[in-house]
Image 1: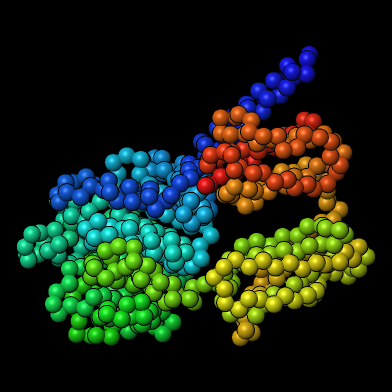
Image 2: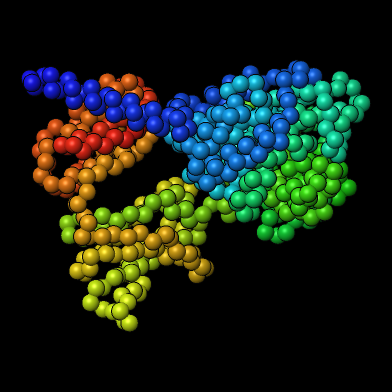
Length: 539
């Protein structure tokens, strides 16, 4: 067989393996997509049914709500493939969205057919892990959908939730407490409609809130609303859903008052638990607020009599805060400054590798608050030291690295540890605050006896990337190795490595400057070994 024919067969086999890989992940995993997520969300808002009494909105069945709740649980727990599979049964899909604006990866739950139950976005690596931005009236309360997404993106919140239609879309009325004139062209009052997600319990909006409350402690929910300002009204009306005093730990509204005034000193305010006589637009019948404040069994008809402080109901006049991105940024800036305490010392990576005869420990934080530094600890497993036939294990301090105090940007740290002759090492970090409080990282293990004894293709970094990224691989022994990049159709883009390599770990750079944005695959081949990974180029 000629070399040319052999190469054709090898390429066909590679295309087949990539196709199998793509098919495998497509039937069980979320849908990968890249682009400008803000534009995508704006398009969803623009296409929302807006007609009063148009009746496109239909209440989800109990079975639908159970499925929706299971999807939210899966997303929170990182089971994205399972979430996507379940979402298909209710005419939804889970997108793995590489956002070009922020450079972040989000998971977007959106409808694929006429189930207008709303859109949910989840950030798996948020800046503020306990912040949830909600827009129950994205079009009727002018621009609050677009504003809420802007706030979600700027604050680095964990989640975003937006209703799927106008609050006035349904002609059917809710049995829950409260009345409004918002859908009428008069001052007459009517019960809230079932399409008004802030005032119904049989909804995906309510179910999402319930699942977050069940799975994440002390979540903070910010709902952005809008109103038409009367002559005697302030520009901003703020409430926790009732007028009782919140605990000091969660008294965020008075802080937000100050931060908004700093952004715009022409603003005036009313806070429900401060201005006790004020009762207009304070969200006391909001079913999410009632649930968060403790009315768990019957939030539809039973007021909450405590104030958790974790539900922030924000009514805003249009021109100063909702009209355009300048007003949205005022609100986002104020919320960022209000929730500084939600910024953790967030450890996003911690790993070890052998370099020049030393173990290199490397870790990275996304954010830091009050971080004095890191004590590096090692648990050595020494084969010849035993007690009662058990190996003696003891954590010992092997170093200390100063932290960055307060930081909103990623910080990287490195520490080298000398080999002591052990076959296995375990490490952890003791992160220490300036006030002496501390917490431990997860433990990582490193086995020198297994180093360089595996054929492995690592995930490229960074990913997504623009336009360059680094690909690392490891080979078993001296052998011929091929590293290639393919597009999603299986067409070869470039050969990065095509030569004999000694046993070891290698790293090569890939430059995608001449190819378009999209999903690509890179393969590592050596003898009968074949590995493939995917990567995303976002320009």
